[in-house]
Length: 236
Image 1 (cartoon, helix red, strand yellow):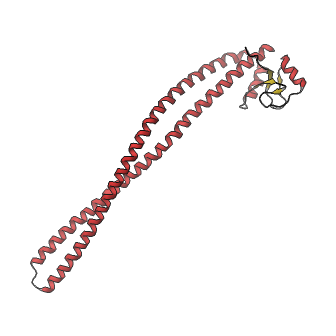
Image 2 (cartoon, one colour):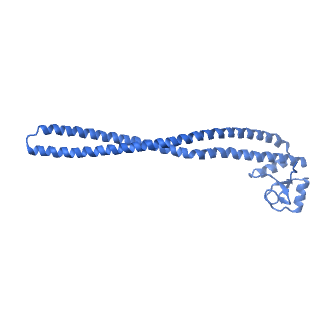
Image 3 (cartoon, helix red, strand yellow):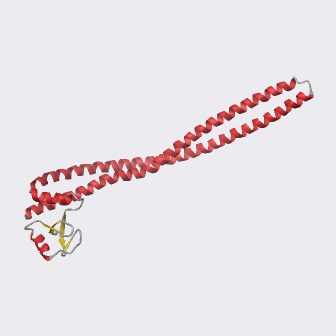
């Protein structure tokens, strides 16, 4: 039985290391995604700002057409002014020209306001884009580092999985089934008797349980957490 327990120790060590590697394989992509999330938000904000500039450009072009149309209308009124024969007609055209000038001025002011907003928005976009480019460069370096680390972790995982696949079949079915049932709960399957306590759940072990675990004649489990109990490894 001691030989079997020693095999279970080895299997447990492999599974513990596999668990660490697996957690790192899950953690690193998640951390990278969290770091890249602000970049996605910035890019979306820049895209929205660019769409806003496009809409401003459409409005500015429309206002410019209105300005040009107003100038043409004012010219036509000026031509009509030269052909007038009565004071009454002259006053009517003069009022129309005054109204047209005011309308033209409003459209010019509107166009100028839109162009100023476009310029400010474009400068803001340029600043945001520069900040995004800097983050993208840093993220690229971080992504390269993480991809390298993930590659090393995958290789380590394959190596440990190979070791497990080699040792597991050598353990008798009864003991392996008990071990797998405990490990299947997502916990460390083996625990040591440490100062009379279970090293995993820290519960005080009955003296008889301590002795059985230390002797190692049979498979002994902690009455509290159910883990397989063994003697603490001696430091070499």
